[in-house]
Image 1: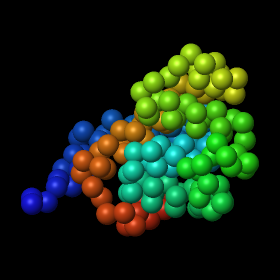
Image 2: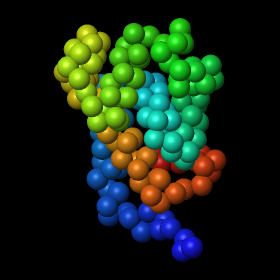
Image 3: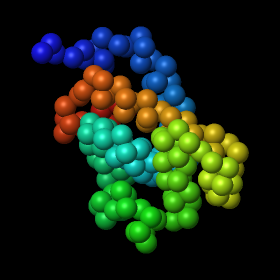
Length: 150
């Protein structure tokens, strides 16, 4: 079988847009800890091993606990997430499934301002895009180093 394209080498022009979105999100209204949890959760859903490795390492480097990361796939039953985090996970799961019912929107709006909800939506859509890129053009899981991409 032919080796897949290394998108980080060959796709620099295409990836510039995503890097720009990432730069915006670093300055967004969504706190870094929540962004990492959302990225980790969406990567679990999409089964993107490279992104799981990356966001696990980044979250730990920013002080996230192993317990909360281990429990994230069962966040509904886990007592150690805030209501705001739970709302973000609900939003992330709905967007990733491409189905956002009105009741989900109304529940999430109780915890996020308009600007925050727009930013959270970009966090979710951005990690979904990266998951799909890394599934199409795999990177080796376990090779990510914290801070590698700025």
